[in-house]
Structures are given as C-alpha cells and as structure tokens.
Image (tube, rainbow, N blue to C red; front, side, top):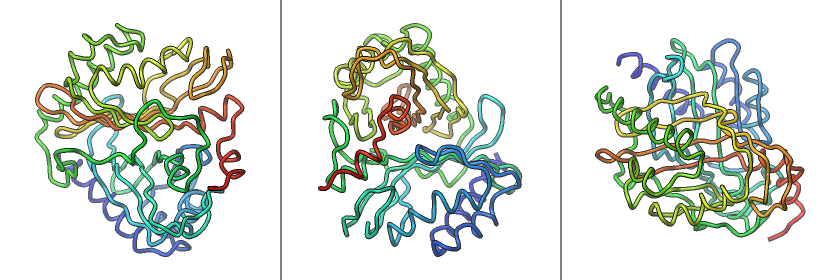
Length: 331
C-alpha cells in the first residue's frame, strides 16, 4: 500500500512540474523524474521512443507549442501493481485543454479551446518513472478543428465525459479488497469476451459483468453508446462483421485500484480487415489495434468503460495515412 502511494506522489510531482515548465524545458523536467533507460510508447505518429530528450522533442514540446496554456484536466487517477508481473503503474485519464493557436501534427489551429482526450500510464521503479505509455484521441482534435478524415461514426460523436460519480481521482489509499474485486470482475469480462464468445459477446454473457445501462465511451471515429443492446448494434456488430481472424495478443498492463481499473496492449488485437471496417473496403490485409480500456465498477458489475484505440496506427497498416488526409483538408 505504501509503495502505491509513493508511486502516485512521484507521478503527481512530475505532472506539476510539467504543467509549470516552458515548452523548451520539458526535456529537463522529464529528465528529473525519469529513470535511466526511459522508454516511451505512444499512438501513431509517436510510436516507440527511447530516451528523455527524444520523447520531449517529438511528443511534448510540439503539443505545448501548439496548445497553450496546456492544462491537464484529470477524470481518473489511480495506481496499482500489474497483475501480469507485479510492476507498479500509475494511470491518468482525462483531457488536455488549452487554446489551439498553432498547427499540431498538420492539424490547422482554431484559435479556440481544444480538448485532447488522453490516457497515460507510467511504470514507477523506486522514485523514478521507468517507462510511459501515452494514448490520445488525435481524431477528436481533427473533428474539433472541423475536419472529418474518417467516414461517419456508428456511435455518438461527443467528447467523452469523466465518471458519472465524479470520484475517479484516487489520491488517497484505497481498500485492497475493493481493488481485487474490480480487477477480478474486469478480467472475468475479458475471459468471457475472448474465450467464450470469440469477441462476439452475446447479450447474456455481457450481462454477467455489465450493468444493463452500461456506457461505452469509444474513440472519435467510432463514437460512444449506451446499454448492452445499443453497444452491440453501434459498435460490436460493425466491428465483428467487418473484421476477420481476430486474435487476442494479450496486454502490457492489467491493474485496478478501488472501483476503477483497466489495461492497455501493444497491440491487444491482430486481425484482417475482412469485409471492411471504419469505412475501408474489403481486404485480407493484416493489421492490429493498440487498445486502452478503463472501467468503473458499481456494485458487482461494470457501469462505465472508456476506450482509446490507436486508429491512426490501425489504418496506416492498411495503407491509409489519416494525418496526410487531414492535412489536405480545410474546415
């Protein structure tokens, strides 16, 4: 328990210094908090980066130059041991917010507030951050800038809110038995999905672990939906009908604290494009999905699920450069 609280303190100190620093000082700030051999994984176009300076120059400084003042507005903050290997991770989910005054990744600025949904993971070793994973919804920023580089979503086009209960910032220690209960429920749901239903998930199997009015907050490009029935119509149905030979590749992290928990993979899923998904034509070309799932447990079932998918990476492997496509558009 003490180690979990220490890890939270390490990451919160980094966040505080990060927000106060200038764009050109971010490498110095990250260097003060990162351990030797620091490793970074992020959505396309960042992908895998070795070292503090390269991470700052490719990821953080361009974002801070484009969006200012950049505020981290967290909805969920939690920590706990990785079920897979016992390593200690801290998870932060929310939105980065600021004035979008300069281009970012080829996306034209709006001169208005922009919200960048994100989920960030940090493995803490001692009192240093040993590695990080950063998922963010770049397609959401494109849409806020008036660009629509992807076909119409199957779910609702919204900037997803935080937890309905407004209790996701777990700065204080949480009861270990509650954390275990959450992680056990999440993994039971995953087992149902992968082993019993082959990613199809019947209504009855989802009802074992999901509330009937479960809310599924998907990424921009897919959208969000509510209730088991509508989730199956607006996301799972198109996903399963459009993709072939879906293989579960496992996760990098699985952890929980209190009533919150989740995972990320690199990649989680490997598949063929099949009959067509995300508006792309039928193909037997192989691709993959790097996915984040964060859950809130309410009682004995899951009530909310936030999902990040590296859609730019998924589509790049199919020969579609979404960043180049968006750069050619004008609102």
